[in-house]
Length: 422
Image (cartoon, rainbow, N blue to C red; front, side, top):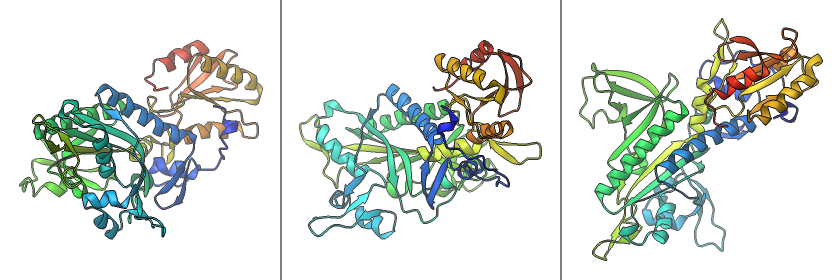
């Protein structure tokens, strides 16, 4: 990508708060735009970070035999009345609804979740126990009228989410699908480089008996979890009483951010919605199900906040995205005298399959270009200035400030050796 196409302003990012620092960099540099509390627009780099997260989910879920679908965002009131959830969601203010025109028979909602829609979908596609189990999943926007929007992308009114739903013929099958998804989640977060704890949790409005949250430990997290010092098993503070836990001396208390949630809800939706399959006795039987969610926007927020970098005084000076997530591995900076050489390096890296940025902005100073690398979160910068001879480049790792002079082939070898998702 050539930076002259990006429209980046060289504004300063001084006096950033320590909490949500990575997201504050995005906001100060207009890489994300806040239209109002909880509603954002994304520029190319954070958008592509989100797409990287989605690609990891897609890759892992394909390996685990899960079926990708796309369900409607706008859903009919009548569907939600079948499950009995319409009035509850409307009355507590969570659901964003579209008023019914005079000619319409029902109102619609902007989906906060998709249990109703996926059961309608399953009823059309799954007729017999012979085709079970099946787990459907999708990635797309969800809408919730959050009254307390905190942490920018951490808790928004409109956000990208992965939601999945398993369908089984019996309770044992439901448990197997749950464990399969649990293993898939573990692999997703491993590949994203996020160290998470799976903790026992409350099922909330989704319902069901078995529920776990995948928590990322962070001082700005809204949740409090307790980790058993001996077994490593974790619990959300909300379920301590449910599990009969009173003595907390054996547990480590941690603040955390919920990145994923998995549930077993049995026949909670299939029974009232009369969503059935033909069982081995050739009789209709309600599906046994589970649902699963990953907050994609929230994962992106955690990645950015965790990638904030500081100067020697502890001030936030920018972002350095992990190489396996960053959509561009290296950013090329040059003095005016070496513009042509920078263009040649850019073409060489692209030809060799290295995702890179060329800062070709003629109106921006050399120093400002260097500062902008850290605003965009690029893991490496390749500097063509007075310190290097022709054919050489000064390479800086933005997370650590480590600098090395090398030739073009050495740079390509360095970047190919990094685990990147391009």
